[in-house]
Every structure is written in C-alpha cells, then in structure tokens.
Length: 325
Image 1 (cartoon, rainbow, N blue to C red):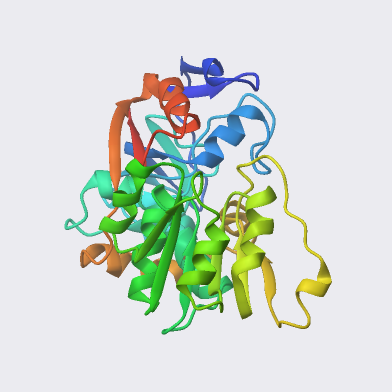
Image 2 (image 1 turned 60 degrees about the vertical axis):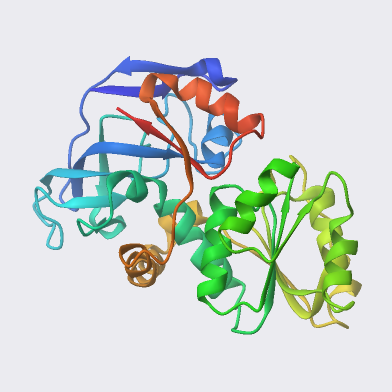
C-alpha cells in the first residue's frame, strides 16, 4: 500500500510517499480501507518530532480517518466487514489502509458522507470534551474560543451553541477569517492582530469576562486570556501552537475561584478509551442529524501532504483539509 512515511523529523519535505506492507490485524483490531484522512495541527508537531505521541521514525502521521472495514480480528464483536466507520488508528492515518482498535472505531450511518466523516473525529471529539467534560460549560455561560476559524474553532462554536452558551466570542488572525467564524455561530469575532482581545472581551461582557476559554495557543495568548476570565471561570489549554507555555500565578486563581485545566485527545485515546466511547454516543448523533456542519476548505491527494502542511503552517487555511489515497 501507499503511505506517507516520516523517516526523519523536519520540514514538509520529509513527508514522503512510500510503498509499505498493509498492516496486520490483531485479535481486537480492524483493518480499514481509507476513504479520506484529516490533517490536524498535531500532525505538524509529529513531523517536527514535537508531538508527545509521535514516537521515533519511521512513523506515519495522522490521528483520524474514515473508510470501509476490510477485515476484523478474531475477538472483534461490534464491527463487521463492510461497515462504514470513523477511527482513531494507533499508527497513523496518512495511508491507504489503517488498523484501529475496536474500541476506537465507530460505525457511521449513510447520512454522513465520507468527507464529513473524515474531517470530524478529532475536532468533534476534542471539542465536546473541552467544553463539556473538562471545561464543564453550562447552559447560559459565555465562551471565548481562540483560532475560531480553524477546524477545532469552527466546530467548538457550533457545539458551544448546542450546549446552550449565551455568548460565543472568537479570535482570529485576519479580517478574512471573521466571517468564517460568524457563519457558524460566533456572536463576536476579534482580529487579535489589530485589537487587544482581552480588552474587547471585557467590554463585551461588562467587565465580567467569559466563563470558559479554549486555548490552543499558549504563551502570551494564554497569559492575556487570564485577564478576561470571569470569576469561577475555567480556561482549558489543549495545545501550545505558539511554541511556548503560559505562566500562571496562583494568586490569580484562589481568590477568584478560577481554574486552569488541560486536555489531550492523544493521551485520552491511549489512557482512557472508554471516555472516547462515551463521547461518540453524544457526538455522532449530532453529526448524523446535521446539527454540526464541518467546515472543509480543501481535499488533496495523499502525495500532496507536504503542500498541505505548508498551507496550514502559513495560517492561510480555515476549517479542515483532507488527504485522499
């Protein structure tokens, strides 16, 4: 089969299309012929050797995909050959075939097309956990979502609305992306390159700040976020795309009853797959009923993985990008 293999960490040029063996299925696994795989920022960190779940080269990047089950292991009970599924494979998704644990493979109805299915697993499962499980967002609360025009951002806006958020604020890096976030339901979108987002958020909330903040940037962005986090508010960090971590002074927390939390979908896939299964029960019906619209900005052949990584790193993209074998 063909797959993108990283034999040494580095720039987009290390993403090379190779012919390798189709992976073997163990007793509790399924073999899936990939229809499409999504590209996530974690894949860029994998390519650079910065992702905590990447392992050592050679590695295949990619965390999620959609396709058709080709065969199942001897102990598999819930998945059958021919099922249309989404999955979180254990060893990368930029390939014609992937192997995934039965517990991390989920059948999808015909009402969900493969492009939507492939674009949805990481962003919907991550977002639901960020807001509901970790951030404990309740109906009537306000939410600030950074990188609001990206795959996570556009999905988080929609799920926050479904969970009853009263005010959804997003930040983006260009005026062109403002409309993208507004189209999926954001009430206010701030170009952080032109304005202090904390100042605008505090003005928009009458000085109270927001109840929940989703931060995937870290660094100074995280520090400024604390300036507009409400009393009893929760800030959830799930990445540090800026390349640096934020700083927390504990005096900022106890008196205001605020909380700083962290979440990693990759860690949860490995350590608590049962949590992922519970998330699927909530998220998949939302997708099947059309309550969540996944923003897809482009699809590319597998061999163009390097070009796609360049596009994402340039901050020019919105929503999700797919790779197709």
